[in-house]
Length: 162
Image (tube, rainbow, N blue to C red; front, side, top):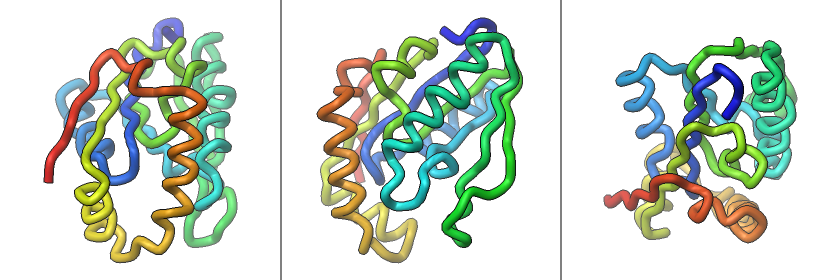
């Protein structure tokens, strides 16, 4: 648990419904959503995003300090504007790589989402209009799952369909 900051983590593979669930939870609770997409250093950046979350956001908040980081600008392919989170602000962190052994120590609630690969890939293609990145990203998801077993760290596991 991160001091007075209430944190919910929503993890799962690409296309499993993390963003949609996070937005629904935020509407219900008034929490702010932080998207891992803003923490990845491009298509090779899942592990970098996990470390930035742990060290640059969760650790400072746990210490009662303001967390300050820069968001990844996908159009520029580089770090963009600065962002910040205040201690005590309710947060929902969503994205693959958000639920790690270290990040779980700071979370009040953690959720793992899953769906069949064909469903997830079809969703990603509808969302992005392109899935040329799928295999590269899947390998990073596999590494994250092998290193952290996020499903076992989650308080809740949910399966999503079509």
